[in-house]
Length: 149
Image: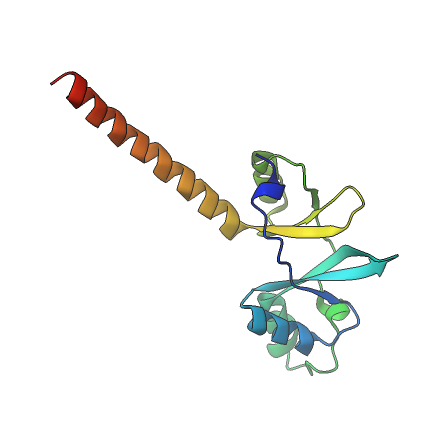
């Protein structure tokens, strides 16, 4: 299964020149813990960074900086990892683990942002699959009881 099948395509994004307060308001409005920072390159939204709720607290609130003056570009993570939409889910999980990241922007062949894969998405998928396997065990037991009383 490719990550394009399970990634969240409703990505909240922001330009790096926007004030950090704008990122905080977007997170609250959309009930998310991050925004993807994008640059517009010839009409293509290319991810260049990420800002999380933790970034806002650690970089601005805890240091008592002015959230209306600091820009998203000032606090965004400088090293952003992305992965292609055709990547297999288990390869994406290994990649997230190797880079110790919880959020992974998904891009198409042109590098355009099309979605984001989060640790929450992965845990939900895996728990659903485990539940289906557990149901299979119960089903097999009931089937055996019916056929071999």
